[in-house]
Length: 184
Image (cartoon, rainbow, N blue to C red; front, side, top):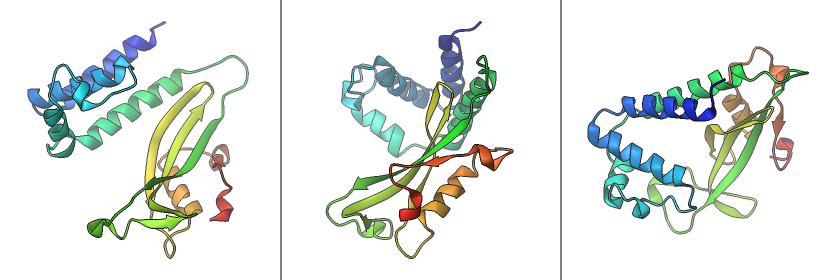
């Protein structure tokens, strides 16, 4: 039986191969190194390999295949979940939708259409979808920006994220939030 380390290494190498240039490959490797050190401060300034400015350019300026990276990671996650077969009952797929507010202060003229007030908090409201299958928890499978009153309700928006999971049975999906979705 292969360990998780073997799968993680294979995934990292496949992501590094997606980078269009050696410079971007090195930047991604530096970022992954920061996250995997698990010292509690994965800030670009803490990198020993690349400068903070170089990592900022990699994340904000340079073109790299974001969609391919997301597809590759999702493909690896699905492969691992399909291999998971505990004894006894088959595990349920639980879909958790979380409404998170990124509070904003000040003026953001170009993004005014995205900044709203919800429950006394002004900011960008994100619906984030998490997957739980048995002991596995997969964060941030998908997300949508909730654009406030006058647009689709939170329930409808969360269902649109849920359709990104190719489930044969919709009865296997359970929507859970900190507040009931009917309140919105």
